[in-house]
Length: 229
Image (tube, rainbow, N blue to C red; front, side):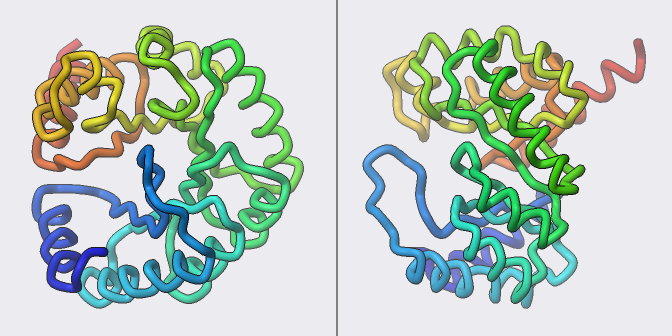
């Protein structure tokens, strides 16, 4: 678990390097990560969110969770701006997001774009029926997909734009990179930047990253090229 000093340093680094949002989680989704109880997840988030709100009270904050009560705590106690659901969502979470009236990031664990589009269409309708309109789609790179399927989804990412909703892409230092090259996550920055650039060209609106400065440079170059077209 990160110390208070670690969190303070990271929060200021993100903001100083131009990040527009701080994403916080109390339950790691990395392969092999330990199970975390709901109580412990809340305790971890309260610790981190309290520091973030103290250090950068105006920062836009999203919370990673698949638990409705954790989402409620984060919004009601700390004014969290967005819920980033690290599962594929369920009716209970949809009802909670409707009650909280915050933007919702809907992640897909479907292995193909066809399955993803069918699933997204059904889930988005369920959310809209509950009055949720601020929805962001995350194709879920690294979730429920083989190495090859991750790249197939990236290749056809623009097909998700038919949903007419913003796309969030999170590929930063993931196994789809380091397994491809036989390297480590620490050696995956260059390929992460390459994939982020491709994602932007295919319609991504939000990049979820570890390396903020490099991602900001990537976005700036993309925007400068496109404003000249």
